[in-house]
Length: 89
Image (cartoon, rainbow, N blue to C red):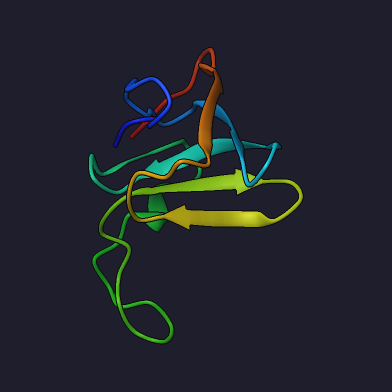
């Protein structure tokens, strides 16, 4: 999955701006099947409550809105900085 603004690849651990300027961290990449340490359990093939699975896109954790799932590239995800020491699984 790429940032639409510059074509750079979105990576687990990236600090991003979403939804008009909210700060967040990419915690899971379901396309690459990677997650930050502590979020590995989000990588599951089991059905979620209400049905379905998370099998594409990224999950971003924000303070203001909690967890946001973007199943495909979105104009509203902007790269802020790479997270030093991120440890994708």
